[in-house]
Amino acid sequence: MVHSMWRSGKDPDSFSIPYLTALGDLLGTALLALSFHFLWVIGDQDSDVGD
Image 1 (cartoon, one colour):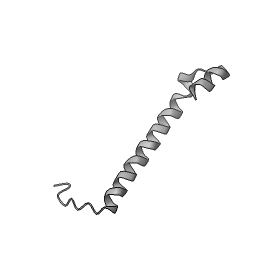
Image 2: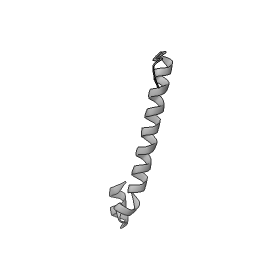
Image 3: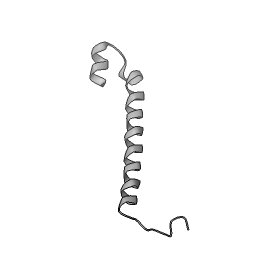
Image 4: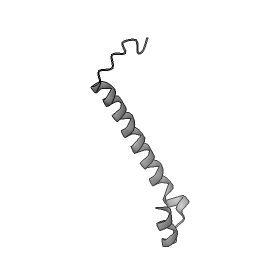
């Protein structure tokens, strides 16, 4: 993405950073949701959570 911004003459700091941070947030949230789903599937019975 950054290389294409350089070729088109745009400043990569201004144009690519919002896309890269949004992609990181999306992937991080998806990984967290997948982890919780995996724990639910294997039947994690941690009953002392929140105590």
